[in-house]
Length: 184
Image 1: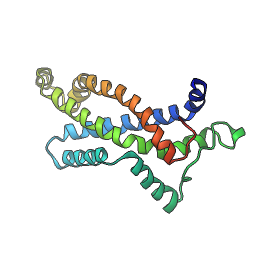
Image 2: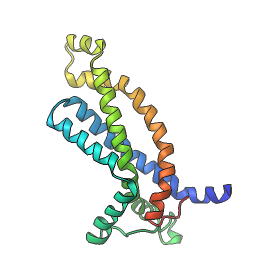
Image 3: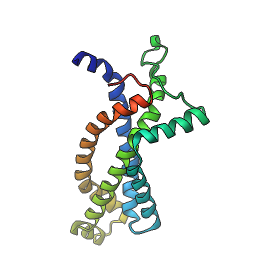
C-alpha cells in the first residue's frame, strides 16, 4: 500500500503545495489589510468574506468553480489530469493548469482561517509597547507594521500554517474525487 500511496502523491503533493501557496498569499494580504483598517468597512468586508469562506464546504465550492470556469466560460476542462510528462500528453504547464481550480477550492477555507489568525495576531502585536516606542521614534505606521509588528505576529500565523498543510493533504482526497484527479 505504501508503494501505491507514493505513486499517487505526484498529484496530491503539488496540489497541496499550490493550495498552500494561494492560502499564504491571500491570507497574509487580507489579514494585514483588515488589521491595518481595523473597525472600518474594509475590515468588515474582509471579515465577512472570511466568514463566508469558513461556511462554504470546499467540495461545494469545487462544483461551483467547475460550473463557472469549465461549463459556462469554458476556460479549463471540468476534470482529469493530463500528466506531468509530455509523453503522457500533458506537460508541466498542462499539469499545473489542471490543478489551479482544485487548488483554489482547497485554499478557500484555509485562507479564511489564516486571514482571521493573521488579523488577530497583527492587532494584538500593534497594541504592544514596542510599537508605541517605534512610533515615538518617528517611524511611520507602515514602517512599524512591516519592521516590527509583522515579525512578532508571524509566530502564531506560521504555527497555523503548519497545521493547515496537513489538513490540505487530507482535504485533497475529496477535491481530487470532484475533479477526477489521480491522487491519493
